[in-house]
Length: 477
Image 1 (cartoon, rainbow, N blue to C red):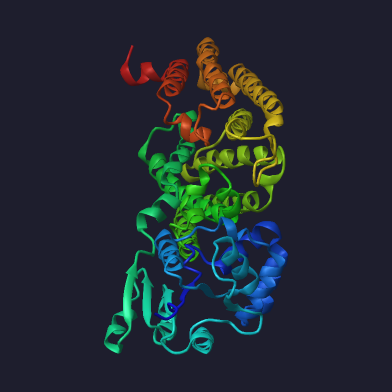
Image 2 (cartoon, rainbow, N blue to C red; image 1 turned 180 degrees about the vertical axis):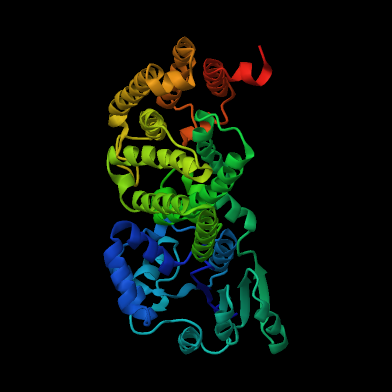
């Protein structure tokens, strides 16, 4: 028997459930956006040079890249049969060679080198020169691989490639493997469970006692716009955090980090969500459009830089929550009280600290969390700042209760003071749950699912309605 013919694996979308070029672009945007954009602009028309420049400027952890398990199994079986298993990719050699070494594959790799973009016919020519016509098996995942499959003994087709249906008639064996992505994974990536946070847009309407459809309907539309805008930013955040997420014990399962959703699909979804969100916002009013745009720009700045800055990240988180309240006022045409804004900001400062406390509780060592400015030794400081936020919020609420504006809306001031008891208990409970790691990673989402905590919030709201005389107005007495 002769030596078995080698198995050649494409990398992007075949062996890996990701694309090294897009990985480099997003990693670069996260580390040095100006330099990365300059590289892309300068070499956009020359893919081989672009890949080489990015690979040199942005080191990637190829050992963390998600692998297609079905292709990996084929590779293991091929090695057991005595076949040489090579990687052949249009990605740059400086990334492909270490990837092969990390997975115990042949050091004989085929890749772009800064001059030749090894894709399609160029890749086919290199493989035929090395192994001869029909001298290899080749695994690929897209129509451009037809140029290579045409010269292979066996075509291993990963995912759905309609053009591959013509290969058997040309005497080429075809093996199909699972690949591609599922819409359900994209749905997970846009995080619809986070949309519940946009109930914050209702706060100005509730505080102003404007319970009418003319106010409610535009606010509901505003909540839709904010939900879509937030989802667009979640995708950007995940794309910028690919490496950090892969190092995290649970975030590594996120669709983009795990490769369940291709980076290209994530980018398309991000643009579509942002455009629809801005379209709805523009249809409401110019003020609301400006607030949505401000929210998206601030969120982008947070994803690119601010979330890595100690304390600045918490202040930014609090600002993003506060912007939602301002947006609710703009959408519904409701005047928002300055007292409300001053009150909710320290509340959100406390909850931002809770978010970091929860993450640090699950940390395995004292090093800073990947992509964050905090480590476990900072838990005490975060607890102190959270406590200051709770105290500040309650103090401002008290001052509001004795202000002219507060007395006008809530004649029974003593009931507002009574409402501070469940309010304060809820805030302290949230902080302590974060301290002991008994929360979700997002405190707002946790709060809106926590039945016990919701009971305290409903009691607080009921006492405020009572103080305003709304129960008597609605039900008589």
